[in-house]
Image (cartoon, rainbow, N blue to C red; front, side):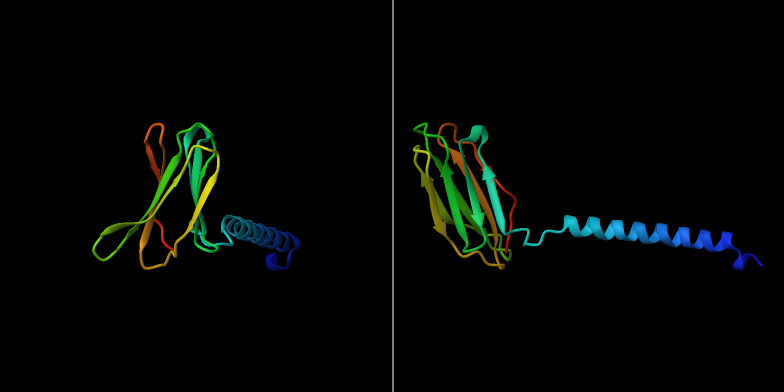
Length: 136
């Protein structure tokens, strides 16, 4: 009988082995792509030419603005809060850091009711760089 033959058993074992291997590979790929922390736990915007950056650190709801070049121009940043019910936008944090290659920090409590957007610019050209809206 074919069902008892060694060829059939080998074919079944081979097929089961391939399915198990594919399942294991899929599980590994999913676990490696998933972040252990919230996607919004750390946000940052870098200015071109290494002029500075603006970052949000979820641990303590800290915003840090850094001017990384002592070029005398300085950098500025803002945080906008948007109400999802009426789309009203309000500046809740504004920061400046002078052209001396240093950092400034502020704390602001981010909550999950509002959406937020960060923006930063170098005083030398005034071009604003912003991130996508986010919430906690």
